[in-house]
Each structure stands twice: as C-alpha cells, then as structure tokens.
Image (cartoon, rainbow, N blue to C red; front, top):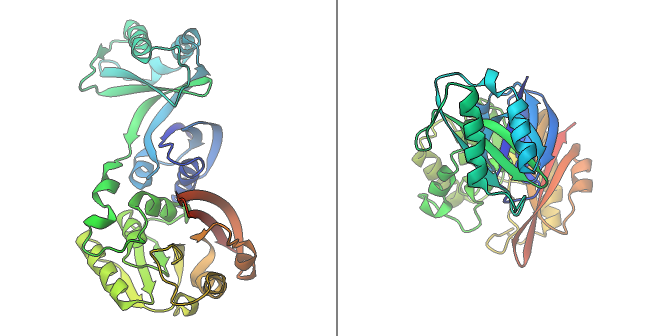
Length: 343
C-alpha cells in the first residue's frame, strides 16, 4: 500500500476528507487513515492517485507522503533528512521545493527560506538540479496546525474545470442548480463507480448528472418537469456525454430502475418549487421510492434544509445513515448533506 498525502481545499470543514475516503471506496479500494490535520489527510491505500485526482473536487494535490514533523525549522530539516527521500527520488531529475502554510500555522517560519534550505540539503545528497520554473519533480511541505507534512507531488486536481462548467455557462440554466464542485463531491460521496449506473431522481437541468457522466458513470435522470428534462439533455449533450437516460417522472413513484449510486438535491430552496407539497411529505414519499431503485448496499447522497431531519424517514425506507455534513448556503438557508446506505 502507498501512503498518500491529500492537500485539501479547505472550503468546508468535513466534506473534503469525506470525499477522498468515499472516492477510494468507489474505486473498490480500502484505506487506513494515518493522520488528519487541517487541510491535510494522510492515508495508506492501493488506490491510484491519478484516478483519484480525476474524480475529486475538494482536493488540490495528491502526494506520496514522506514525513510529518513538528513545525519548528530544525524538526522539519531533521525529518526530511531522515526520510526515505534518497531512495524514492530518481537521480538526475530536476526538482523544486514548495512550502505552503495553512491559515496562520507556524507564523515565525519564512516559507521561501525554508524551501531553499530543504532544496539545498537534498541537492547535496542526490544528483539533482534545482529548477523552480519547470521541475520534473516537486516536493511539497504543508505547515498545518503544529506540524509540517512533506510529500512528493504525484497528481494535481484540475479545479479550473469546475469554474468552466459553472451553471450560467451551460445551454440550460436554473438558479437552483448546485455548483459543479459540490455536485461532483456528492457523486463521490455516493460512492459512484466508474462504469456503473447513477441516478438523480430530482435531476432538474442535470448538474449532478453531468458530474457523474464526466467521471465515467452512466447517468439516469428523472424530473417531474419536462422542460427541466429537456434542459438536462441539452447540458449533457453539450459536454459530449452520450450514454445517458432521461425521463419525465415523479421521484415518489419511480419506474423500475436499478442504480449503483444515487445523489440528488430535491427542491427546497427559495429558487425551487415543491409543487405545493410540504417538504416533509415530499421526502417521506420519495425516500422509499429512491431506496427501491438503489442496489443492495448501494449509497444515496441527498440534501435537505437544516431543521428537516431525515434519519427517521430514511430508516423507515430501509436506509442506514453513514455520515452527515452541514453547509451554510446563505443567511436564510443551511443545507444538510446526508449519506445513507441501503441495507
């Protein structure tokens, strides 16, 4: 097993680490948590970092973990010097050292000067050339809390793609559509397998379906509004996603479907409509129908407004809670993000 260091985005307290662990499970790999610090997660796993980087939304970089030390300069230099870096790095390659700081960790350390010292120490031991502009290898140190975590960068997450796919840039737009990064995170939280079937029973104009299709799942979308379904079709086709299924239907009475994973954002915000139904009634009637479309031991990621607790409703539908996250959307709306597993 490799020991991987995930540099997380930090835009949410719990979602980034949860997304990493869920994506590994979606790839049918196990993991063992080594340590979790602010915006850094270290795991032992056989999952391939390049594949994880292509899936993740709330992670910035993946590195092979070298060492973790205290945040004092002397401790950092000693830890890097005593690590297996000589054995791990191929000789004759150009390299660079980058030091980042999470929030106000280790404020007395000059990150530029520390990077120079680490680079000089490595260059003295190995036949390496320092190249700050176009290095073949990069060593990354992250100062976080009272620690410094060091690794060799192996894969970067292209987070610019999510900005390019912002909802207003698509052929069909609806103001209640989730941002692409959160939609992708939910697809991963649902442990969606590449090549598997993915269902969104409240698909709207297909924002979550898009993210499932991009990672290689086969999207199935259902919405009660035919115009929304047409919009989802236009959005999926605009991204070159061809293998999908869309239908007009009611999430409370889904047709015979079988999905490996489900992620959905039912209508509850001020930009959405529940067609006159009370929210609790909508979830109470939809959850058993959704559970019936989910394969045994498959996962559902679903949102709701804070104050509407889904645990009892989900349990009565044969769903077991796995995790729960809270996200503030704006002053009048806090979103709950649940992950359930079908028994």
